Length: 112
Length: 109
Image 1 (cartoon, chains in turn orange, purple):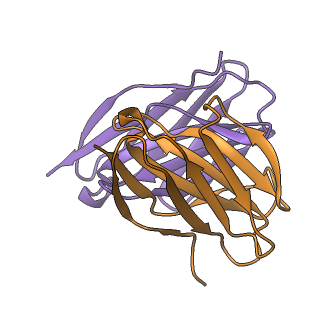
Image 2: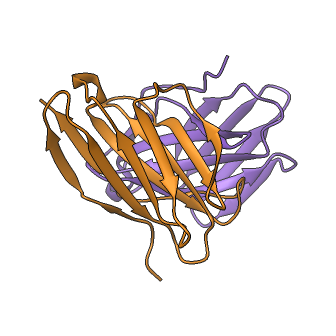
């Protein structure tokens, strides 16, 4: 069985641009969460989606948005990129909302 | 607050046991997790423990939970060089995981 897959693996963007990151959960998992991991820190929660609805949101500005599709895959969108958005963005998949979460390899975003 | 605290570094000799400690904040957390992160990689779920358990053993890994002190530990028996990584503890709160800052484990021969 494939694990959580994220694309792209690496991305370089310019300040002010927009970015879309993608995540496919483990087959059968209905919940997808997004986390931001800045270098040297632990991951910080951004969003959780379950059954295509937003179920939780972390302390991130409105420039960050996400959605979940009928096949349970998800996109994270970030508008008006700032240098401080440079980080590893991790997607986590779980069967239900509050069961063990399995992470993908992440997308490393660099904003220049 | 939402701080999950861990010591930053741990250095052990190959073959010895490693013990990584964590203190968490939310006594209502249902699950407590340990994740491993190798350089440039995502998070690998190592093990987890339900909040109504005191101990869980899984091969070389032993998790101890002290709910009174909100203290969680991960013991790795017979530590190998391949165990060198950053280890994160995390507590579940509502719909999210709250992570510690990670403990960097270095294993030397």
